[in-house]
Image 1 (spheres, helix red, strand yellow):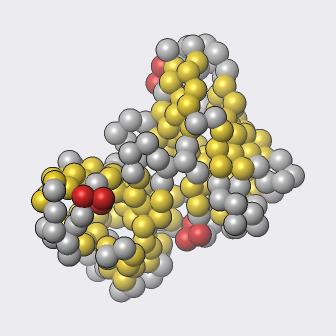
Image 2 (cartoon, chains in turn blue, orange; image 1 turned 180 degrees about the vertical axis):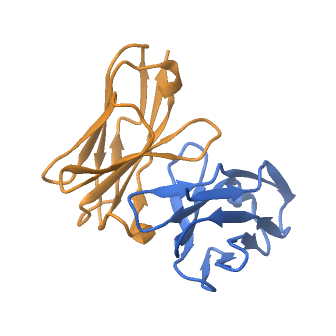
Image 3 (cartoon, each protein chain N blue to C red; image 1 turned 60 degrees about the horizontal axis):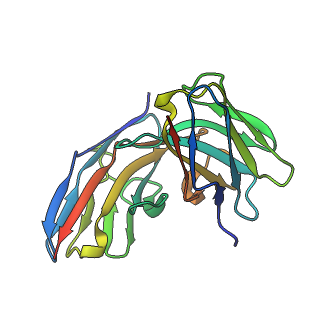
Length: 111
Length: 114
């Protein structure tokens, strides 16, 4: 079945460092791909999305490109801030009833 | 837009009890999905309701059940609570059953079973 694998955390970076969180997926067809963010004590917020191959999703300085040839959707940000500390989930939706999530990557940004 | 709201925000129950969680979907959305997020894990799909009927179900036992009302709000019911049911329960609303690009999540209900 469909699945998402993302790098395990926690990831600890200093403020203004470059961020990459790796995500790969297994799916039939052409799923939509998502990154969600969960701040402490809160629900899920959609960070960015891409619906077809080579699409780049972007929001709040974060970017991810839908790479069908490598089945990847890595999350990147050029300069992280303390306020980016959160748990990040890679996910896919494959035109059925559910979203499939990875296990999440906890990000700590040190001032 | 009113957003997706869930109630209560926190709940403590005893093993063997029953619990009902509630979700109000975003205005204009007719589909509600429920997810269970155990500590340190990603959300797992429980089931989806579309126009008051269950449209799909994940790998959860029958003691997890739900309802959707004519205004598209929804309830998640869990009977015979077990310790492992302790988790954050999230609901998501969307305007279609299969296109998740416009799904919106609520803040969740944190259930603790003791």
